[in-house]
Image (cartoon, rainbow, N blue to C red; front, side, top):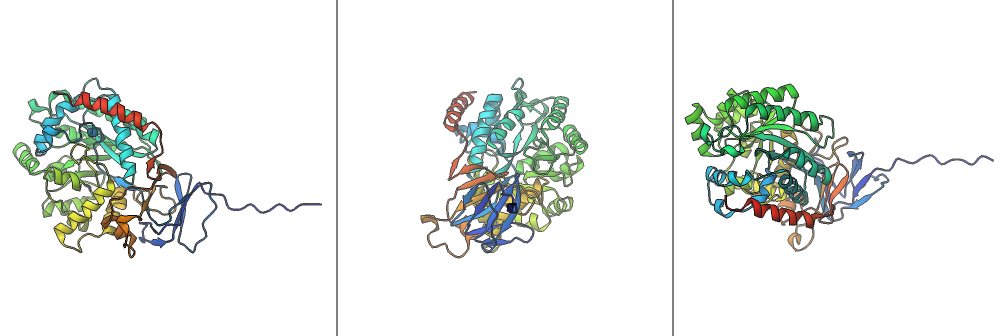
Length: 465
């Protein structure tokens, strides 16, 4: 007698997030799915459905009851090492240039251990705030400090965060007419050689990559024009992205006009950076013609609202940049200028500043969510891959709680409530289908020990120069 063999059922997905109050997919149609669910298989989104769509079987399920589910937030500008000098008292009231001059001598004490520990702390902090992909602009490479980029990549791999470190650089010291001291600048040939070596060792161009490298001379007042130009040529050759600070402060305008005879955006253009390979940080002070030029190039902008306010830089023209076609993402910026690293906080602040600048209808929570997700993906050259919940995109998502006292009465619009109420931290943060935050806590052990090591290192770095 032949016993019939049941037909095999559908393959279970690796992770199913189900039962959400709302899934804001941020896909091409900006679908919002009440009672929705998201399935992830092999690190990528394999299905998305609404309440009436039967979910697939799953090896693991995360409940999102009463929660908003969004794509993972993308941090497009950060200096993670700076959490070792958070709220450093001698610098808290300084302008950008004064702040930098105070802190450069402290950062000259960085080494691999300091960078690894600060990255572990900083990446964990970002994950708690709903970040799943982050850049980092590490531009201080003291002599004899070791391989600092490799140290922070090691921390990101251990924690399971998607990471875009940028090989920052400074070549103009005070004696050359720049701002940094001699102890933290490098020879241009050494910078270029190390940049190429880091790309060869760590850059992954594949879809769903966890690590990608970009090249990032720091700023017009710390890098020679020759290095800026050579870096752009190297990035073209290696097919990696470019990043720098641009139009951050009126003092930068004054410096560029006095030193180069042109404004920062003109300087950027003349050095071969005008194009869609680059994204820049801050961009607070472009004039109307420069906004249009950035849009024509497709150059992205990392909007850093908290840092811009703390350093008194001004209100970035975010709405005008977006209207001109500029990809605009969100950035926490350095942990000793913004002093915190919550992309939820940056998103809320961006919404409020947008309304302050342009009126009550100028910036909605959905506009800001788009900047924090799709906008960030565009800055990093990963449109369609990051910042949305669509089949084939990276399986990065955040489950945000909408309960408790802060959300009492917020019944009509979960997306607006997400930013207007709060404060909010992630209930679950998922990267490539794996939780890095679960039930509001980091999943990786050893954080208390890391924090003790961090305090010891921070005390040593902050001792009197």
